[in-house]
Length: 272
Image (cartoon, rainbow, N blue to C red; front, top):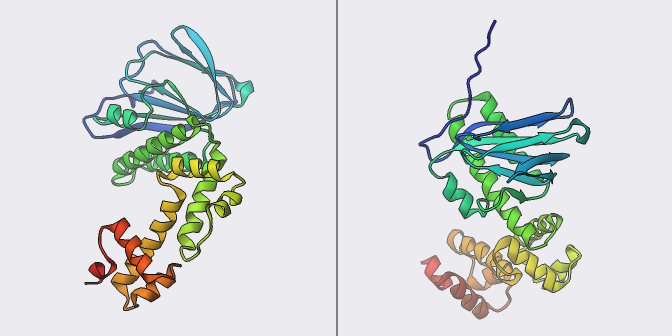
């Protein structure tokens, strides 16, 4: 009996749409793909183990783990996986009116091969997407589109981080430092204290922190204090001096100046 295979390949007039996705463990036999005219939609391969041999402009290159391969619509696709390499690859086929704009915004449109590292965060996002797409519960298309947007934005962030020559384990350290600062907003630690936590020099730490968060460590620390202070002003009857002390600032006048500098208003404005 013949089995009709329905292709997932399509264009879309939606903002963003996942047409298909899945994870492939390709160690059973060699796998070869040759699409002379490509596909109608965008196609991502995220290599998390082994090697993909892909041909661009009649030249074969070996793409290792931690790389994303991006094929644009109607772009020739020639690639292969050899079983001996124990390759693992996640694929996403997607389309939509915003694809080109989003890929450009996240810095993913100019290269066919983008290094993002083998990221647990990307893997977790993809796993959720794959599960949603497989179960096809109500509104799964919207959930998948949201997860794809998250995947692309995180990939863009990781790509920019690695382009600066900063190892991905350093970015994980930055996440931990940010969490520590938010949870211990009342402390007044030096930048050297946080640099020591991730075994970096002060200058190297400051550079990596700004690349990861978009702000300097000093500004991030101050804003953590201001955010808590704002909540205390709005939701409690504590005096300004007590609020300042609660976030680790002994001088209430300095606290007021700092608050106005970063919010545009005095503490009393928020309370009123």
